[in-house]
Image 1 (tube, rainbow, N blue to C red):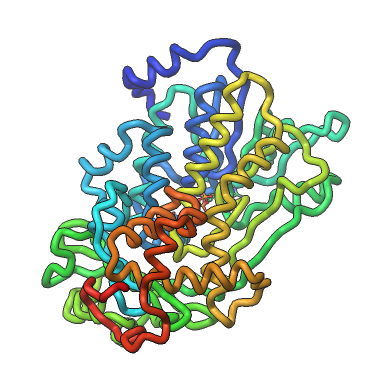
Image 2: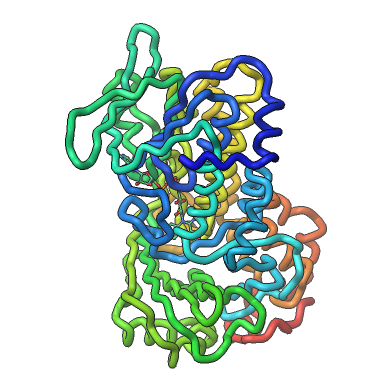
Amino acid sequence: MNTLFPNSLRREASIMTGARRGTAVVLGASIAGLFSAYVLSRVHERVVLVDRDEVLGTESPRRGVPQGHHVHGLLANGQLMAEELMPGLTEDMLAAGVPMGDLGGQLRWYFNGRRLAPVRTGLVVVGGDRAVLESHVRSRVERLPNTEFLQGTDVVSPVHDPGASRVTGVRVQARDGGPERVLSADLVVDATGRGSRAPVWLESMGYGRVPEERVKIGLAYTTRRFRLRSDPFGGDVSVNPVATPAHPRGAFLTTLGEDRCGVSLTGVLGETPPADLEGFLDYTRSLPVPDVHEAIRDAEPLGEAATFRFPASVRRRYERMRRLPSGLLVVGDAACTFNPVYGQGMTMAALQARVLRDHLRDGARITPAAFFRATARALDPAWSIAVGGDLAFPGVQGRRTPMVRFVNAYLDRLRHAAHGDARLSEAFLRVIGLVDPPQRLLAPASALRVLRTRTASDEDRNEPSRSGTAPTG
Ligand SMILES: Cc1cc2nc3c(=O)[nH]c(=O)nc-3n(C[C@H](O)[C@H](O)[C@H](O)COP(=O)(O)OP(=O)(O)OC[C@H]3O[C@@H](n4cnc5c(N)ncnc54)[C@H](O)[C@@H]3O)c2cc1C
């Protein structure tokens, strides 16, 4: 633990009144655990973060976060919320050279080979090496005087008092051996990611099975880093030909600062972008726009490729449990794991931390049922975007209600129109940036612009184009 304690944090601490709660233990010291620990530190005497990895000082991918090999973007609303939770974070990252840019002005979005009209949104997306993003968030937690990191330590199981229907702590064990020991806690927050064992724990403690929703997408991500010989960005930060049912291969080309870039290729429904350089380059040639291939065809590869397989988005419906013990919350990927192509996970971790902060405010003990109901409401828009988007792929199994079909057809048409309409482009990007709710796209202001656009049968519909100048009606 670092004892640095800047004045702003001192002020924040000093305005807290009333008795502090005892110890909070956060399981997992990755993004969701860090955001949660930060807000808990304001009202708890002591916050202990337990992680199986050595996390402090790490700025490269680690074993417990295998997705750390893949370039990450913090969506616009994630940036806003992270900044609200940790004021000055964006400026710190900018000063440290973390790439960031305007959501519509400096990130180039392509759907079916057509670029969404570029537009300055005033909204910022922060991108780059995931471990670097995490280290910036972690340093904010390290600076707090009442946080501790218990590293190299496995979480074994919660300690449960069945009489009181309460979780009173957690059993942990150092990875280098030694006996299990108990950390007593007033509150345990599970942020152990998509492998969370909370559903198993709850069932074994007699609370029943956690309802779960799964949408199988069979996604594979293959990422390589390169040293560029020419600049494909021209002041922008990323080039993103997004997978669609018509063009199911997608890519994210992102600057990593100076002459370095990361390229993540995506395949769905079982297709895996190749890891070998030749296969990787071939795959970029098959994308509906040439930009990614042209950027890297003569670039110098850096290191090896990394592939991540993501079988399904999973949402654990804790809010639908009939009974829950007090003293145990679940956040981040442990509660809901999103298809990563939508880039929502870290934003949702920040959002859940904000809900946690709001539930800690009134001084009363936090009620898990109320917390889970609130986080469910907060997760709903992102989940509907991700699941709705996945169900647009005919091979994805799931219930396609008339509404899902209508929205997907409408969005297809909207993106087509947004190719030449900056206002629609901005409206769409504000929704995928999780700033505005999805319903906003159905409002008359957008709907009229969409309906005026020529339809799917228009002659140029499927023609790839690199410019942002297609006609709108
Ligand atoms: C390929 C890929 C690309 C992605 N891209 C993006 C993106 O661009 N933008 C975005 O917002 N999100 C993205 N995501 C999602 C994002 O990575 C996650 O949503 C986010 O990391 C969730 O954070 P978390 O803290 O909940 O879990 P994790 O980051 O998975 O961390 C879990 C932590 O718990 C620890 N842990 C687990 N089990 C134990 C145990 N038993 N004992 C002790 N410690 C334990 C682990 O060591 C780890 O530190 C992507 C995901 C993937 C797979």
